Image (cartoon, rainbow, N blue to C red; front, side, top):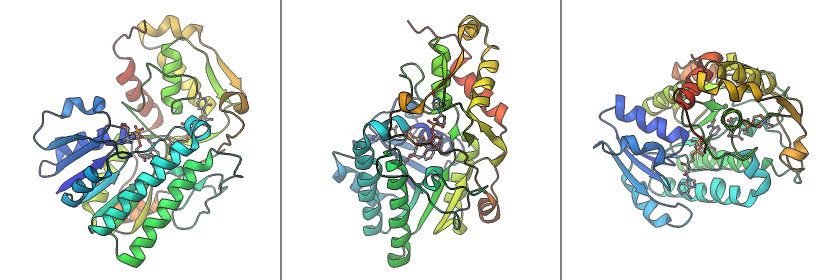
Amino acid sequence: MNILIVGAGGFIGSHLSEEILRNRRDWHVTAVDISSAKIEHLLSEKKIDFKKIDILKDFDRLEELIKQCDVIFPLAAIASPLVYVQDPLKVFELDFEANLRIIRSAVRHDKRVVFPSTSEVYGMCEDGEFKEDDSNCVTGPICKQRWIYSCSKQMLDRVIYAHGVRDGLRYTLFRPFNWIGPRLDDIYNQNSGSSRVVSQFLSNILHGKNINLVNGGSQIRCFTYISDGIDALVKIIESERANRQIFNIGNPHNECSIGDLARKIVSLAKKYDWLKNLVEKIEIVNVNSDDYYGKSYQDVSRRVPSIKKAKDLLDWESKVGMDESLTKTMDFYFADPITTG
Ligand code: NAD
Ligand code: UGA
């Protein structure tokens, strides 16, 4: 099987490529990205071909690869909330327009698609746990530009679904709930707010900066360790029952407020001797979202997945607990001393 991963150089793409090369020797990966930094360690293997393609500029080259593959993972997107509010059109152009071209090409060439939707499509839904086929998708007013990511993904979910009904497109939509792990984001050059929360907090510690809790930090996320996510993706590839389904892929047992997350990370960071002096100087402070992200930000106060459907149809469950997920992530970044210069 030839698996085309667009955005293979990113967090999820690099782990998916690694898993396939390590454990699925009869599968081949065609890896597309503008950067190969996170997959350099894989590129000497025979079962992977890396193609440096900017999908915004060179769709024709991508289309040739789509024709040759069996399954496409269109993973290239902007997934950082600061960009949603500072450059929403850039999010729309990549996350929606470029990915729409990939979906249309998959329809033309009758290819299977495994598309990354997101927990963000549920937006400010107030259900206790979000269900793929029942929960409402609730976003805010247009002036709250944060929702451009959620709406772009939701619209693609709807387009893909409709192609399934009309054209028989074979697809699976998966919705990651705050996946974390090694290679999540670059923690060495992060400005405040430019990274997803776990890597942002690690970056702050590394640079001796205070940790910011947006609007007090009572908002809740369910953090999911990357190996659990990749396990689900492999089951999706292998399962007939995944066809034309949507799956939440998250860990409902790892429900954690952002304030508690900050306190856990600070406490765990003290275990790395070389970081001790930096950690002791750091304070956890409250910031207003208008000051931190800008006025067009709006938050999700609690987000918990139902994973019943993934359990029933894929025989998948998340396994890695909160502390273990954080420890494994922090060991990747902090096990060896880092000089920030
Ligand atoms: P990531 O930012 O780590 O990876 C995205 C990759 O896309 C990067 O390697 C980047 O270089 C590449 N890319 C960007 N622009 C490109 C272009 N013009 N041409 C070619 N490649 C380009 O993101 P991720 O965390 O791996 O997420 C992958 C997908 O999953 C995204 O669609 C994201 O929205 C979705 N998702 C992720 C999470 C999560 O928890 N990580 C949650 C929900 C949804
Ligand atoms: C994320 C992003 O939209 C996507 O990466 C992804 O699709 C999706 O959710 C997901 O992973 O499921 P969000 O969880 O809001 O959205 O993004 P983070 O940047 O990780 O922030 C989590 C929470 O921490 C937010 O409430 C944010 O305000 C808060 N935060 C973030 C802080 O309190 N301090 C910071 O320095 C950074």
